[in-house]
Length: 433
Image (tube, helix red, strand yellow):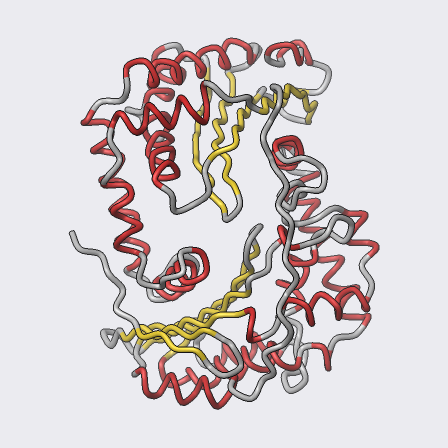
């Protein structure tokens, strides 16, 4: 199966990269804008700014009154959203092809003229929205603080991945209007952005419209370099979180390769072999056979400057997490010792290929063709990297999976977080109990 996204790439004098993909099967078009800034670009102290800006960018700009951004797009049947990660912030708009000019005008106005409409009231409103989002997703959600605990211990103090993308309550509260202006001028400029346009549009029309709306914007100064200190664990880390939950949960996390590498692909396939579906090793053993676990999951999260391989297991009532940790580590050792079967690996690759194709059936939204073009442009340096990306997984061998598991997991230290019901610390795994 040949997977490809035909495209044309060019750059404006302002420094903005543009990628255009023509798909005339439906009268729809997607506009996808990425900025090379995420929570990993924040200096220690004012954390959460990249995510806060994801909210502020929808609150109006010099020529777009508050509320008009969504109203104008909904009026033509369009939709929009955005997201923030450690390494980037993205915004997408899906509209009928006849409304492409509207979408580009809205994006250009907030890229070039957001600060002219930024005031203390908008900052205060969106700050409260983000704080409430943090309460819902972290403080008040069962097991919600586990990921913040994992990253905070997997990466040392001062490392750009140490803090969560959403930031801390204290840092959000301390944010000033001057801080917001400085952050925008530093990171939100054409020279630090890329636009992907996919759908029912010609390259000629896309080029003319992008030049019209973005060509005159100043490129801005080059953003500062971010220091990336070593993130290796010198010893195992075992922690306990008491939470208002009914069932204990264990999360194991290891450092892993950056994205788009061969070992990143090997560990992603290992995660599927271990915990994707009822035939996977950990699910079959812990949930089906031994009936000691309620659920199990595993995933490889490669990022630009490091990755994390994580395994999560939720225990049956009153079961200590030490039993589950021992079983997980036994299965990892078995992978290293015996490898994985060709059939297991083949199923994992097939599922991954299906996911690739399903995502690329959409031109826009999260993971659609426009989003993928921008991701490959920013992190692989080539918007047409999709074929090579898929080939990484096809090249993985059973021996490659075993070697990646040995190097990154069984012979490396891990962060182990036991989340237990309040007052039931005895259920925690290992020395943490």
